Image (cartoon, rainbow, N blue to C red):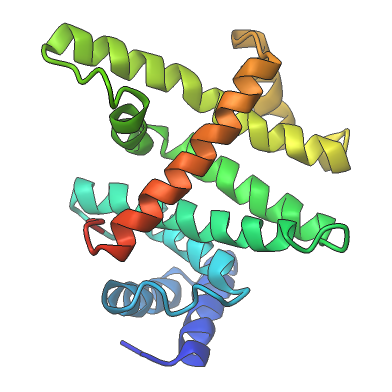
Length: 219
């Protein structure tokens, strides 16, 4: 475990690079050290541009089933979402000098989180989406869960929409093109859906940040 920003950045770089080069054992070793560090100090890279790469490293942890506990995996997905959203917020604040390529990468990573681990975000979204109408029976709970699940594609598509403003062809990215086509085929996407998705992103970001700050996020 490290408390040094530069050491953590080196671990993140090593984890991602080794993972991309097929050196899984070395990557997992770095990821375990990263996990120990963020358990102790999750805000170590909060103001650093590397915070998005830290989010990417966490995605790798979940994909490789490095953590057995489901609740901790749910928390890690929220943490990855938070880190990448923080990086998006920081990059957007630089407009009109923001880096379009970097925003593309960041938004795609956030889409990957929301698509790959959509179930992990349902309870959080359900808690504040129905904050004034908590379910009192199983049928109502299931209906609310179904309603929230129907919003998740809109949250994914809202980032696709923003990418399209810079890259109308989504840079010919096969994953994004396929996902966009699937969502548009299955859902009727309106401006109201788009605005709601933007709002849900803001609420999820704030909710996760507050949970982490208060030490209540399990991961």
